[in-house]
Amino acid sequence: MRDIQISRRQALGGMSAATALALAGWQGTAAAAPGKGKGVTITVMGTSDLHGCCLNWDYFKNAEFDDAAHNDIGLAKISSLVKQVRADRGAHRTLLFDSGDTIQGTPLATYYAKIEPITQTGEIHPMAKAMNAIGYDAVTLGNHEFNYGLPLLDKWIRQMRAPVLGANAVKDGNGRPAYEPYILKRMHVPGHGRPITVGVLGLTNPGIAIWDKGNVEGKLKFLDLVETARKWVPVLRAKGADVVIVTAHAGDNGLSSYGTDLPVENASALVAEQVPGIDAILFGHSHNDVPQRFVTNTETGRQVLLSEPSYWGRRLSVMDFTLEQKRGRWTVTAKSAISLNSNTVAEDPAIVALIKPQHDTTVAYVNQRVASSTAELSAAESPYKDTPILDYIQKVQTETVKAGIAGTEYASLPILSIAAPFSRTAVFPAGDVSIRDIAGLYIYDNTLLASVLTGAQVKDYLEYSAKYFAQTAPGDPVDLAKLTNAGGTPDYNYDQFSGVDYDIDIAQPVGSRIVNLTLEGAPVAADQRFVVAVNNYRQSGGGGFPHITAAPVVYNRQVEIRQALIDYATAAGVIDAATFADVNWRLVRAGTPVF
Image (tube, rainbow, N blue to C red):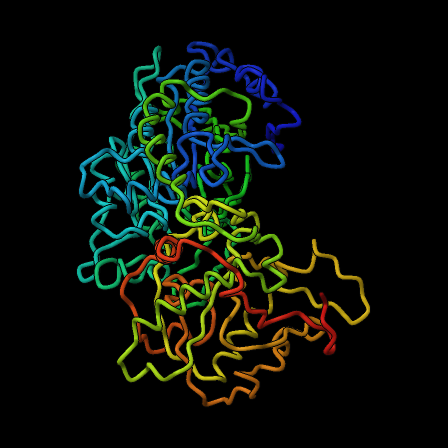
């Protein structure tokens, strides 16, 4: 079976959903009409990694969302596709699931978690409001669901009409499921007496134990996806499931971004391969568009269908299952999947109208002016040059930690700061700077901590970070398209330090790149101690950087870094690079600067 996907090149924005479905290889209702042959076809639709995207809107640009591929985003677009599929197949033949990372990622989501949190106001979270209106049948927990703490997560779960699943999230202490492990959905097909029972098992990501350690430690544990599926899939079959679907917030490459202390992060294909009795897996977390992939189960030899619908509502996975009755039981005899592109349909006006009040509130908030910048500051070159806009983050983090440790035994230690180029498109414009400009620079809901590292540990940390660059010999041309992100390292895992000076020699192999590491002109001693400002994601182990997780924490007041940047700008009234810009690192080759 071939992979099929509708892209913008295949289906331009004016194309109807019906035409898009036809181009995608959609067979239409005739292929599954009751009474025509023995087979009955049911359809399972899926989204994942919506990350707070309700409408096709870019809050950082204050404009309709668009990118180089002309993708569209948001649940209002997804709703239009879902309605078309339901109309084509018949609502009684369709189910709709999501594989997690739902309530974090946009200023809209942040506003109702941090500015006017639903735990205090009682207002329905916009993602719950939209998903309830669309009619999801089940939603699985992603790792970002835990970013705002368990009380807000619990509140959102209570607001959802669909069950929220997470079989491998268990209570610390007794090991009992903390959330619903699975659901059974019975589909009554006209013309056939026995309903089709679909069992859905939800699995979330073990990395939560690291990435949101502060929110879950001592409360929850996150078990291995394979072992959890091996426990629950037989239960679903014993309870009469004719079709077993796993919704997993885990990629399919079998790798982890952390060490071996936790179960595998991206285990979806491993689950398909090692656990018998699964028909299909709707997966997410890796933000890829995988319309259709088949994995052979090693115990049964059967093919397991996998599908991942990109992220932010760019795609809708559509999986078809043909079943026949054999000895009184329904049996899956064929399955396939396609991916529908949300840029082929208009936004559902019902969802737009439903979310508009909350959307408008968020737009008004993020467009508030907080300061004036004396010049335009851009992050475009920040992955390979020391830029003033990242130095602004370093300045705020350093000043915040300095004030926080004043009067303590650590106050006399030099303060270093760590920041990464989260967004290459971030800009502080000359003139008025708004909340959305600052939020566009710091796009994550991280909090600020500070730990103590030695000079030797700082160097190790920098060496690990420098693997981000492709090795480039002296005299070879420097291709900016290939210079960064070596080995698949994302921009957010390239950490830059302030407070010390250093060169990164990209002509050298990984592990031998940091040279001329100095403090105020003197070489940094191996046993010299530093207070290092760092975000909670990194301090808890995100990215697998050395030493930082075990280093003593000397500052942790749960200050959100994005809000600290906003507050600092508001208090100063002016953002002047002359007060914080400091070129303290550079790329070199054999001592010669690359730029």
